[in-house]
Every structure is written in structure tokens, then in C-alpha cells.
Amino acid sequence: MNVGQGIFAKALRLFFDHFVLTKIGYAVDPFHAGNDEERLIPTANGAVRALFHWPSKRREKLPLFLHIHGGGFLFGKPDHDAVFCQRIAQKVGCLVVNLDYGRTPEHQFPTAYHQCYEALVWLADNAATLGVDAERIAVGGHSAGGNLTAGVVAQAKELGGPKVCLQILDYPFTDALTDPHAKQARIAKPLINPGLATLFNKLYLPDPALARSPRVSPLFASIDSLRGQPPALVITAGNDLLRDEGDAYAARLREAGVAVRHEVFPDVDHYFTHTGPKEPADAAWALMEESLSEAFRRDSGA
Image (cartoon, rainbow, N blue to C red; front, side, top):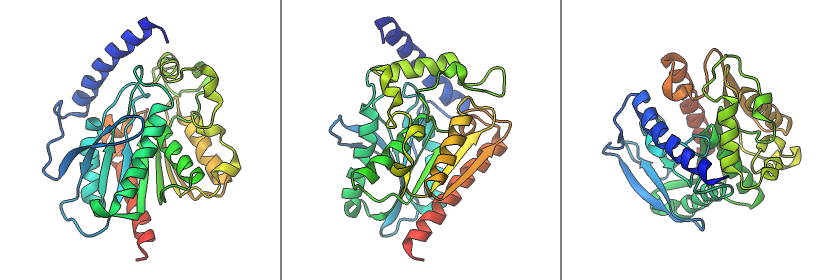
């Protein structure tokens, strides 16, 4: 990454962050609900900001959903997802921790990869203080957040870390190795085009050779390393440039014996859960809520 790319990326991020908030249809600072609070979670890679979205009816030992935003590791922040996380907290009756992480170009791989996992460990270690059930923690994210979710789950399994009862991968980025120009989109002008995907990869990876690592490209994880992972909900968008790699990762998890629910939403593009159309977006959020409720109910012994 050269200096010019870094300056351009920062300018692009400023524009995108404002545009997304406007496009979603709420004010620049939507984080205002009375049941929410902002905290800093300590990690060895620097403290990370998180929005804690509490259900209006609190009870002892709430289940917890760790939510990781998308944005190609360059764009995005928890505020973009706040209204959706508030909805999950109320409908599922869980604490939603809406996590930030170090973005490019200032922070390249593996900063975010480690921060997200260390946040999970901190939440599990502090479950009693938070009033959270450490046996009912789910992790999920969109796009780059789906990539980081896969990384969190893999680290939890590899390091004997906190138990994760469900992983939600919403149109995840799973393949940094394949040239984006070789990936297929079903429409002429997808939201993520090959040029933008190439920029994301260049900014995120300090060394292009890292693209082969399963920590960067979960699609290339071995079947043995995937065995024993928690059940997964994988959502892909029919017209998305990332659709094929999301579909392929769902199939690979299933091959490893992981219980997978895979839903392809046709005729929509990347980020449809945030910008619409409304009907499939609502259906996707309802599916996430249903999957979380089922996982939390299953692991409660009820």
C-alpha cells in the first residue's frame, strides 16, 4: 500500500460512512436508544469501541450475540448497524454487543482478526458481571464481518476458547486468493465490483501471500480444522460478487459435518440487509432472529 492509496482510502471511507447512514434512512448518529450504552473492550491490540444493546426486559444470565459490522475492512462502524442490533436485542431477548475494530489503511491484518476474538474472550470472562450466560454466546457479521466471524469461531476452536453456539455469516467474504476480476456477478454493476474488491484486498493485506492463509480466506481452511465448529447460518445474495464464495463456504462447512442452514436471497445485491429492497431485507433479519432464538433455546436446555 502506497501513501496515495492510503489518502484515497481515507477520503473514500469518509464519503461512504456518511452515505450509508443517509441511505439506511436515519440520522448520522442513530445511537440514542435508552437501553443502549457505549463501552471500550480491552484487547492486546488496543481497546475497541462497542455498542451494548440491551433488551427492555432484562433477566438473569441473558444470552449474548457478538455482532461484527462489514465494510471491506475499510468502511463501516457499529453505528451503521445500531437500529438492526436494537431490533435483535428486543425480538430475541438477548444482549447484542455491536463491535468495532481497527480498519484499514491504519490497521492491516491481523489486527481486526485478533481484536474480535479477544473481545469474545473478554465478554465470556466477564459474563457474570454482565449478567450474561457464557454457555449461550453467538457470533455473526456481514461481509468483512462474516470473514472476521469465521476467524473468531476458528480461533475459539483452535485455542480452546469460549463456547460459541451459533455463527451467522451474512454474504461473507471468504476468498482473498482468487483475483476479483475472475469472480462472477450476475448484474452489470454490482455494489462490490472487481476494482473495489481489489482495493479492499490491497489495503487489508500487508503481504499478498497472506491471501492463501485460512485466517484471511476461510474458504481454504482444511476440512479437519472445520470439524466441530458450531452450527452456522449462511446468507448469500444472488447478484453479489461474493455470492459464489459464500455458497462454497457453506458447502465446505457442511462437508466438515457442521450443521448449516444456507439461504440464497435471489435478485438482491451485497448489503441488501441494510439498503433493501425492504421485503428480502426484513426476511433476512427475521431469519437471523429465528436462528438466534433457536440456538439460545437449544443451549438453555429448555
